[in-house]
Structure formats: C-alpha cells, structure tokens
Length: 254
Image (cartoon, rainbow, N blue to C red; front, side, top):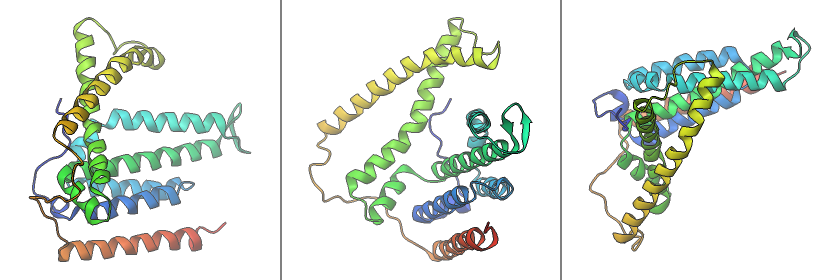
C-alpha cells in the first residue's frame, strides 16, 4: 500500500495555486456546516464534491477511503438515531427527525473529508507550506501544518502494515459480525500508536540535529504565484460562498 496520496499528474486542480485550493476547502466546509439540517442540499453538495474530485483525478484515493467514509457515515447516523428524539416515530424512540439529522451530519463529515483528500491528492506538501507562509503564518506553524497532513497517510500506511503482519500470523478480521470485527481491530491500535510515536520522536530528533528553527530567515527553491485562472476561480468561489449565505438566511428561513 502506498502511503502517499499526492498524485503528480497534470490536471486543472494540480495547476491551481494552493491558496485557491484552500479557498475551495473553505467553500465546501461552509456549505457542509451551514446546511447541517438539510440532507437534500447536502446531497447536492456531495455530488459537486465528487465532480470536484474527478477534476483532479482524485476519485482513486476517495475509493481507497470508502470503507472509512462509510464507517463514519454509519456511526454518525446511529448516534443521532440513539440520541435525538422527535415527534415522528419509526420504532421505539427512533424518530424520522433523528434519522434525517444523522444523514445530514454524516454527509457533512464525508464532504469535509473528501474535500481534504482531494486537496492532499492535488497539492504538494512543499506548496502547502509556501501557501501558509504567503497567508501570513510563521514558518514553524506552516511546517507544523504540512507535517500534520504528511502524517495522515503515514499513519494509514503503518496501520495497514501492522494489519497485514497480523493476518500473516493467522488473525482473521474478515469473518464475524460488525462488532466482532471491530473487537479484532481494537488490539491493533496499540502497536500502531506506538509505531507512530516512535517515528515522530525520531523525526523530532532529526529536526533538532539539523538546527530546525535556528533562523527565521528562510529561502525556498520553489515559488508559487497567483495567475489569471486562480483569480477567476477565486472570484467564482467567493460568489458561491455568498450564495450559501443567501440560501441560508433568505430561502431557508424558518
């Protein structure tokens, strides 16, 4: 399993400035959170997210994460069904209102995660660091953000390696009910966390040995710049953000 999600190919999204793609993330996050109680609109936003992923040829990484996305969606729906009461009963205390809120919450989380996956797929970590610096974030903060994003596929790769090692020793994680499978995965968390902590410690020692943070004056071989397509794309995104506020406070007034 490859631990790197970035795909170095030539697409429209790959050519965009990373700051424009950060604005895309912000736009989808706003839609996901503002329409948290409207599953129909979130369904439309979800289709737009899939189209956005196809522009950057990131659907492959989305499919790789389908199991995690379905788990998050299912757990969110179950939690809302168990905790939210409503006048329209389905069975026992489960209500239609709780089901709709669960679907909305699950879709919101899935939209946010898929948007993040597309960003990681189409943006180099070095470009993200430069974008954060251009947006006014200190270098240490920009490096921390890029490192945190870099750790996500690394953790996934570590977990997959440990899982495959345990399968080779006879661990059966494919049989049984959902709860039985979940119990089999829980013991794998300990070696995964230990491996990640060990790797993080080694990484921190490597940074210290190279004098990281000794000087605030830094230069970069790479450069990023806003081009005409970035300005046009950003204006369109700002219009979509304005549309979200208009729909929320004018068309969806209760």
